[in-house]
Length: 120
Image: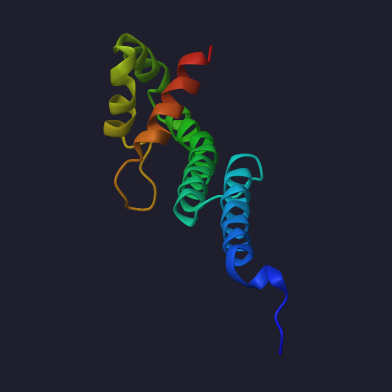
C-alpha cells in the first residue's frame, strides 16, 4: 500500500508540527475566550455560589431571630455602638447566626449585622 506524500519524510514532519500547533492554538483560544475551565476552578466557583446562597437564605432568619428577642431595641443600640468590624462577633456571640447546633456562621453574622445596621 502506497502512502500519500504527506505521510512521508518532510511532509510528515510538517503535518505533525501543524497538528501540534493547531492543538496549542485550540487550547489557548478555548481557555481564553471559549469558556473552557478546569475542574478545580469550576468546583471552587460552585462552592462560592453555594456559600453565597446559604448566606442569602440564612440572613433573613438571623435578622428575624434578632428582632424577636425581648430586648431587641436595646441590643440593636448596643450592636451599633460596637465598631463596624466587631459587629459580626456581636451577632455570633448573641447566637443569632447559629443554626441547627452548628457553630455560628461568620458570613451570615456579617450580613445580618449589615442588614440590622441599615434598619431604622
